[in-house]
Image: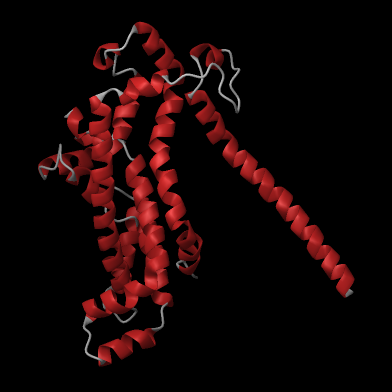
Length: 292
């Protein structure tokens, strides 16, 4: 095969690859753009199926209804607090556990890995978990959301593989210089792990931000709900016109595009944060990929 044929084949591959990726981008973005358009459209336009990529009967009624409710902002604040605290605890526990498992000379290492992997396929079940959380006195508290989900086994294995890929000579040199285990982890390993740490933070933050069922299950006080539970109740009709002080017409309008509005309000913060960690995302996943 000549060089000309190879160059032509490469150009064909690039063109074909570009077409496929363009189709994937369009298919991926279309639902989001459609949801955004529905959130700004009128009840009649949505019911008639006239809304596609551009809002029809532009209005902000539903946004005003949701934004005027003090409970919405209370629950939004709760979500921020839950996400920040839960992500911090999850990162600390996952990092410590993964660093331990990355040491092949550790006695009982296979057992500890097996315990972690076992939980990926088997759990105690909903009722035993509820009894456990209640028995520990964690109902109606932050800890009911944070502690049961503090370690994701998938994230643990990715971080473990990343730590195993780091040169052991660096840690041995640091140990010779007098650093203990914690000093090596803090001063040597973590500075080299910014990519995988940013990736894990993103994974955990998105998971905790979108989570609603633990709060729905373990919390009875609406002042403690995250915004996802508030929006779930709004969609389900649990929050009526009286709680908003809204007119019947406004509630009718809210019912027409409330799902679109709630999705936009829930996804928006993650979309704002993602660009700041995106540059670490691909390298973190690839460097921490589970190797055979």
